Picture 1 (cartoon, one colour):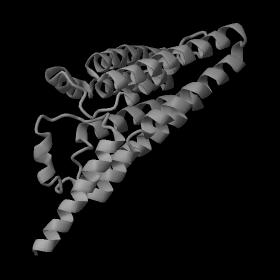
Picture 2 (cartoon, helix red, strand yellow):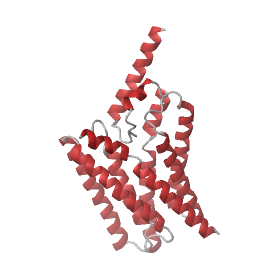
Picture 3 (cartoon, helix red, strand yellow):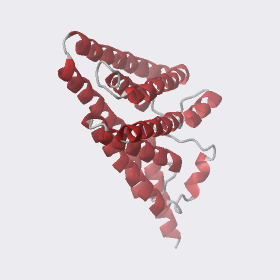
Picture 4 (cartoon, helix red, strand yellow):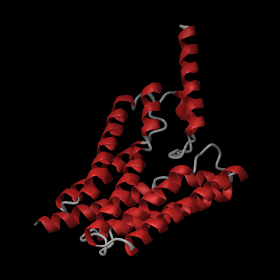
Length: 253
């Protein structure tokens, strides 16, 4: 019974994980149509590749047992995210193109180094702990990336930049793998995904609180872009615009 539940939650995690990885496709459709990356940042996608590669490696049978479903979805995610990064490099300005390409090469090199060390220098339990820690750290970083967006939601009282379905998929994916890790008694799967589940729940709560406060700024995002990789400077600029708009409105009362 426990093994069956373990498999079911892993399968559900694969499905929700796929939906999560496909969520930015709307943003990249916009980039391709406009032939410009505008103010989007490519860094989150490059870092997600590293997370996917490390998690996929950790799930392989010779590293950790009973985690093949972890490898399947993260291997798929690595391919999808690589497509996003390549599209970003094609349409980015020259300076940004060089930065993202350099970061991409660094990420691949770092993964290769970790993989080689785990194969050549470590065995058994030591290999599992080493790869598990590496995968866990970058999983937490990936799940924690929307924190700046959550801060913006609270400050502007608008969920314009925090799409409902993206938050929902983060919660469902994190919860599925958290339960999968608990059933498999694997802290390297349970802990980072428990963190992700918690952050996803907070995002959904924020959405419930501020869902009716999308305001006029929603019109500026009529194409439905998920805006997952907005540059910090753009977020700060839009945050300032929101604040100035509120001040002007108060001045007319």
